[in-house]
Image (cartoon, rainbow, N blue to C red; front, side):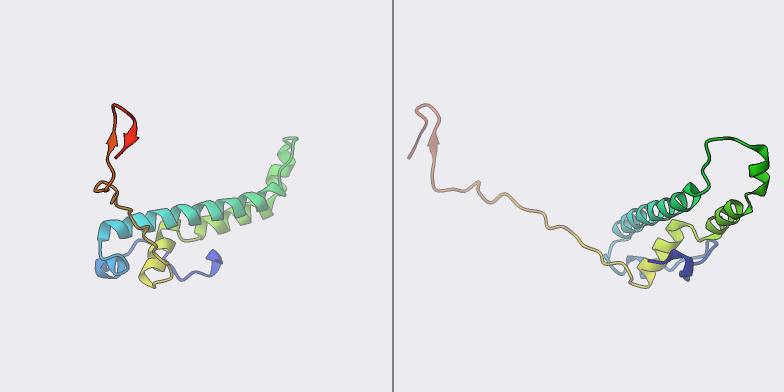
Length: 125
């Protein structure tokens, strides 16, 4: 996803909890989904920023290069102005852009089996 073109708010605003909890019918599950998605978004943005800043990496520290490297400063400022990953994730859950998958919990149904094992002899009756 292109996070540069997101319509998420840059500042914190009041949210409608019913919109956030609509996907899971539980506000706590929704918050967990938002937190996990925010971690994914944050790591993707960090990887992208690291790739762009790797072009400017030098092994020699030169005072003149620090002042002349305006492109690196502009890139860093651009990423600082982006909405925070948590705000992007909240926007995605409110606009139903996130698919929420809940794994099924398996129950142990083998407790009422017809066979009994005799532990003294090791045979099955």
